[in-house]
Image 1: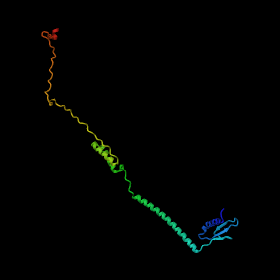
Image 2: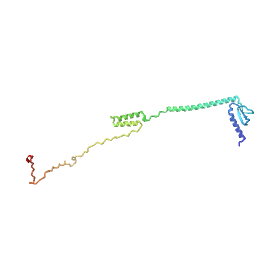
Image 3: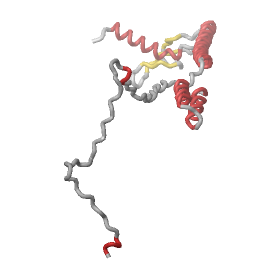
Image 4: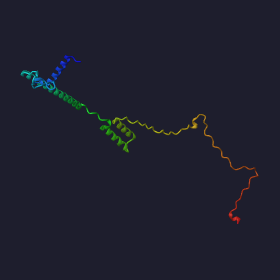
Length: 209
């Protein structure tokens, strides 16, 4: 249960809240509704009503007008400062973006890379270019385009044929010259005297007729 002091404080707060719109320059009255018995606050005088907020003087009205004008000017100044700070922030961001150097192009998109690739293609298609020139052009193109150079291919020449030299026999000590050729063996059989076969005589074809 609330105390009478608390109820009075609540009624005072309600009265101030209701009279706040009227305090800017109008006079407030507290009236009692005869039908419902409720207490009302209005800026119009009523029968049996009591003045809650006295009518302000000219000096009070002037001060209230000046305070209201100052409040409006402060609010406007704060809004202008907020807008100016936001504009300054945007200008600083645009200035920093304009002063930022453009990003460097990728090595594969540079003019040096394109020129090196064209040179390598020309060397590879040329019938007069040597293998060394083609390999050099391809390595230069890879380096200009930011790529590792291809592994170097080392071509080993085929071994040269050297005939085997046999040492001469006459160079050795104790050499007595080449061996003699073997003697020819007579292929005719040998017969004892008086046993030789008689020679065969061949008749001419006319003697047989």
